[in-house]
Amino acid sequence: MNCTQYIDVPQNNFDKPRKLILILGGTGFIGSFLFLHLLKKGYVVLLLVRRSSTFFSKCVHPNLIVYDYDSFFEQPSYFINKIEVVINLAGYSGGFKRWSMSVKHKIKESRVTLTKRVVSFFQL
Image 1 (spheres, helix red, strand yellow):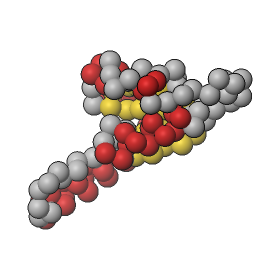
Image 2 (cartoon, rainbow, N blue to C red):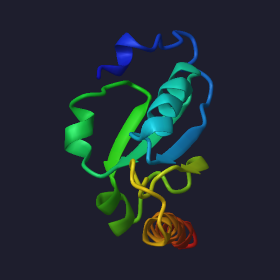
Image 3 (cartoon, rainbow, N blue to C red):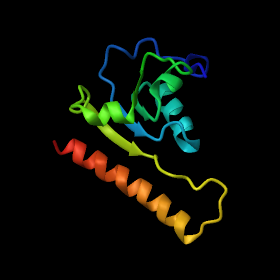
C-alpha cells in the first residue's frame, strides 16, 4: 500500500512541532486504520512491525518511521525521549479459532509479555 495515495499531507503543518506516536501492532485490523488516520491528522508515527523491510516497501510516507521489533528493543533508540504516546495493539489475535482456554492464555500472554517489554524499555 502506498500511504500517500490515501493521505494528503498538510502542506503548512511542518513548521510546528508534531507529536511522535509509537504504535505496536499497527499492521493489524485496528492498527492499520489507526496509523493512517494519525498520519492524515499530521502526526509523526513510529510503527513497530515484525518485518520492517516487507512493510516499508509497501508504505512510504514522510511522517512514517518503521522499525522491526527486535531492532527497536535491542538498542537504545534515538526516539525514546521524543515519543509522547504509546499505543499497543500487538499480540496474538486468535484468528477465527474457538476461544478455548489455551487460545485465551496465548492471547493474554502475548499482550502482557510485550507490554512488559515496552515498559521496561522506557524505564532505562
